[in-house]
Image 1 (cartoon, helix red, strand yellow):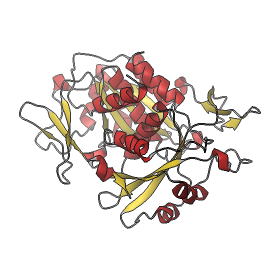
Image 2 (tube, one colour; image 1 turned 90 degrees about the vertical axis):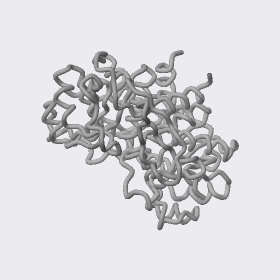
Image 3 (tube, chains in turn green, red; image 1 turned 120 degrees about the vertical axis):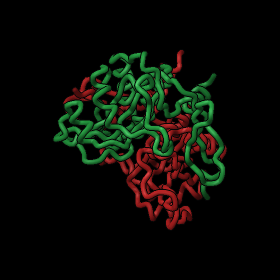
Image 4 (cartoon, chains in turn purple, orange; image 1 turned 180 degrees about the vertical axis):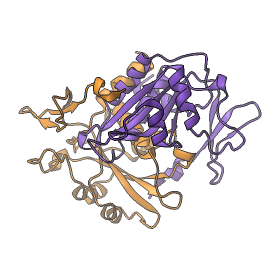
Length: 194
Length: 194
């Protein structure tokens, strides 16, 4: 398979995962390998102002989990049950001593991280619905210098996710009776404007 | 080579390119393949509010080029000479009818695009230093609905770019006498905070 096809397959397989196998830990060495990928990303003005707090112990995971909101469209689902919870997290932080914003570095790096996770068989979910101050406090992050911006939840996947063609303009994902998570995506024709 | 190593190699090869072979055009079908990769990216609230205007004709490229600022740290370089200019562009726009911001979707998608370009042997440079209204006017983009956020310049590379270990806190890239472009990157130990 050529590089483009490999990349396309990885992107297709790299779905937001929200139910994990809580019995399978992720080592801190794996988290380091994922952060190492972000070193290679382009960076606005080459400032590279993003940092990562890794969390991989049960204690750290227990401290973060209750601070995160999951899957806004699944209103009758309170989030992963204990046996489905992530077994590691990366907290992406902005180094405020370097910059007050990071342009699009956040997404550039998060894409590298989730693709890297996927390539290792690990599922990821990028989360934004949390109170940065509370996450920082839970992990002892000094918010005078480092401000949490995104949390990446990680674990071995315990759910199936399927891409679907979007019908009309309804972008809400859903679960079918068999537990599969379905994610509607806009057609290419809608993405290219003239 | 396994998926992780392939991804890591692609990320390492995917450097911001600012000098291209202006004699080699890029077809609109290639631009479509790159935009198609963005369909597969995660999206905040799954809104998918980003759109792309493609530019691939000499007339379109000539209209955009003078509106872009290149390589802020290379103060004695006015940007690519005519024979080094990009031969295509993707203008990433936010659909204002759907959202007033895109969270980190911009970077997630730009990473997919530049990796995809690299996999096809094409160099890319993500540009932010431009007036969105002027770029929109040059391409006839209706800013009542679509607001340009980033421009990706594309072309077959005509420069070498090397990653370097950053010395101290100096993040400025530079060119050596042989024309090679050098980009200092922070060490992994600096990226992981405790």
